[in-house]
Amino acid sequence: MAFEVRPLSDVLGAEVIGLDVAKPMSDETFARVHQAHLDYLVLVFRSQKLTPQQHVAFSKRFGPLDRHPSDDAVVSGFPDILIVSTRKENGRYIGVPDGGPMWHSDLAYKKETALGSMLYGIEIPDQGGNTGFANMYKAYEALPMDLKKAVEGKRGFFLAGRSNADRSFKRPLNEEQKERTPGNVHPLIRIHPETGRKCIFANPQHTLAIEGMDEHESADVLSALFEHTAQEKFVYRHQWQVGDLTFWDNRCTHHIADHTRLDDPTYIRHMHRTTIGGDAPFYS
Ligand code: OGA
Ligand code: MN
Image 1 (cartoon, rainbow, N blue to C red):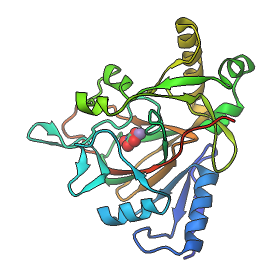
Image 2 (image 1 turned 90 degrees about the vertical axis):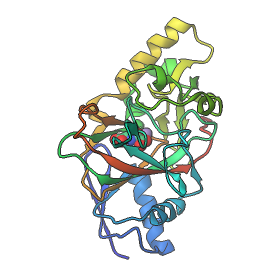
Image 3 (image 1 turned 90 degrees about the horizontal axis):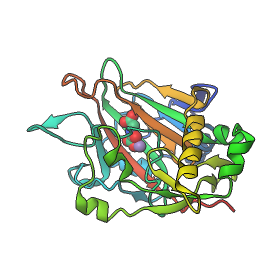
Image 4 (image 1 turned 180 degrees about the horizontal axis):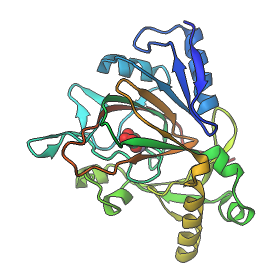
């Protein structure tokens, strides 16, 4: 099927125009989409009409799916689909209201971290609720020499639970979910397994400390690193429309939800997310 790939910014992101991802896709078309994803890091497919089955089927073209630890926030009958939603029923959030309180990449705390995530916008507020995406190849390439020296070749401790303590995380993991989600050690800089390019993998939501480094020095280095990675020059902010399917590469990008009205009951933002599993990050 013929489709067009139109860049969304100079930083990252492209819109895929003229492709209905709910329909079966030839290997040739799929190969072009796959290449566009590697080239642009974030793809946006607008005006999609996806059933949960179709969302899962398209996601699985990229590899086996993985699951978020919040296994009680999924679509009924579809354990692979996480509900990212500010909707409440009987006073309780039906999903994860704030999927990204800080810059992060998905499942970065697992041993095998996520390849990508596909987030499908079903209900979008008139204002707010953008998603920021940051290019970690560019952030790596622009690292000041002293910071590069401090992080290159080092590993860090990654943990999901960090966001439980930080900010007002509205749906923290319960004890059992936390127990099932231990932390892991990963390189701070990783080599992307498909492009072979280096990128920054550490993120402020999950990376707690640098292995083998004094606690204070580690905190200083990480805070300098995360000040660097969050610079606007690496960021594209996606303004959602109903029917948008965004597909980001978790290996070489960070993302964050821009929720300024989370406590406003008229702020309804309802989405479905699948997560494509990946491999253990490596540096050499
Ligand atoms: C996610 C996430 C960001 C958003 O679903 O993984 O971080 O804007 N979402 O909802
Ligand atoms: Mn996320």
